[in-house]
Length: 207
Image (cartoon, rainbow, N blue to C red; front, side):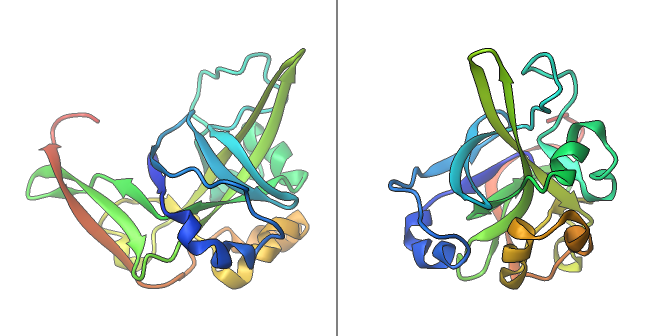
């Protein structure tokens, strides 16, 4: 599960991002602590857009849901009512991230860690986007797809964001749904590292 990530210093990687989509944002906004319902930069088949993190299905009568939609399990993404329409309509997006956070138990305490690629190359999370509208109220939102973790970070959490290899980004953004189903699995994207942060809490406490 992913409940926090960062989009910092993306301006240093503009050449990297430009490989996947024509034209970039005029101004990058550095965001250090992105949480569900806060805005983040996303890339879809047409370009860049800020969207709120927690997908609001187009069929919902209210923008505030009674269940969490900031993550979508890859195993059920084609079936769950909240996500299946966006999937069938190829409303897929990529969420660039410089790091994301998890709280594994270390020595009996939940220890915050930052997970990132060595060399500080951006991670490219696979996601879905949606546009919700009631009258003049329009909300653009997204969810991050999650999968089983790769071996090197399995000790951190039993789920991880779907991380796309560079050569799979174009297909994720533009291909038909049936051509993307095989991407709904863990991908070895590079040398991931987990950096411990000083903050920690007792493992018995809920976070």
